[in-house]
Image 1 (cartoon, rainbow, N blue to C red):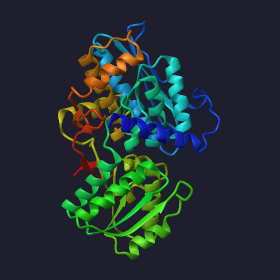
Image 2: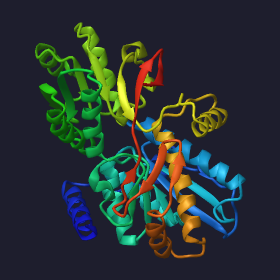
Image 3: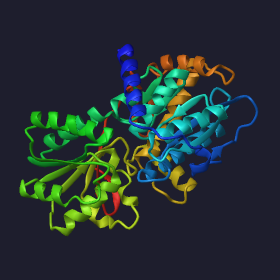
Image 4: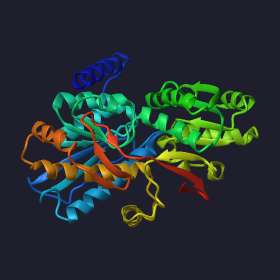
Length: 397
C-alpha cells in the first residue's frame, strides 16, 4: 500500500508540473500572514510547526480559519508547558489555493526551520506539497485536504474526511433520513475535491435508492452563471440539490435559484462551511441548507464549548468554522503524537517524521471534531455530523 501511495504521489505531481507551473515568486510578498508567527517561545528548545493555506483569494476563509485555530491551540499548549516541556513556534504562509504558490510557501517555511507541517488546507496544493515533503521526509498533517492523493506519501496524514468518505456519507445521510428521492448534483469537474466527492456520491446514491435527475458540471472557467444547471435540475423535478463545491460558487447558486423561483433543498459537504461569511451574500438565502461536517459550534459537549469560548475571546467574538476546529485538533494531535514518541526539538526533521509516523497510529484524540484515531495509511476514523443553517447560524441536526 505504501509503495502504491508513493507511486500515485509522484505521478500526480509530475502531471501538475507538466501542466505548466509558471515561474516561482516569493511568498514573502503575498502572504497576508507574513509575520503572523506565534513566537512565545525563544531559544533552541523550540518545536517549529509551519502552516500553509489560502488566506486570500476565493478560498480565503478556509486558510484564515486554519491559521486562527492552529494559533489558538499553540497558545494554549505553550501556556500549559508546551510539548514535553518544549515550546512551539508557529508560522503560517498564504498559498492562495494555488499549487505552485503552495510549494513556494513550503520552501519558505523550510528556510525558517520548519520541523512539522499543518497543511496544506486545500487538496490540489496539498498534492504538490505532499510530494515535496515526502522527499524531505517532513511530517505532514493536513487539516482539510480531502483528496485521496493528498496523503499518498507515507509521511502524510489528514484530520478531515477524504472525498470518497464525504460522498458516500452524504448519500447515506440523504437516503437514510429520506430527505429526498429525486436529487440533482452540481459539481466542479475541474476541481479534485469536487469531482472526488461527486463520483462516490453517485455510486452510493444507487444503493440508497436515490434517483439522480441531473448531474451538471461546471469548471473554473465557467463558475459564475449556473442558470442552465439549475433549470435542468428544476425540469427534472429535483427535490434536493447536492453541492460538493466550495462556498463562493454555492452562494451564487443559491442566489440564482432564488431569482428563478426554484425553491428546493440544498445539501453540501465541508466546502460549504464559510458561506455565511461571503461578502455581499444575502445569508437568508442559505436558510435550511444542510451540510455534513465534523464540527458544530453549538454542540453542548465540554470540549466544543471551551473551544468556541476561547476562540471568541481571541478573535473578537468570531464563531469558529469547521476549518478552525480541524486545525485546532491538528496541533493537539501533534502534541499527543510527539509526546507519545518522545521526540525533542534537537532531532532531525527526518527522525521526527519517522517517530511521528508510528506514534500517530497509537494515539487517540478526543478533539472538537470528534473521537479520532489514525490508521497507517494516514486516514482518520471519526463520525461526521449533520448541520443545518437556521437563523443565520450553523445548527446541529
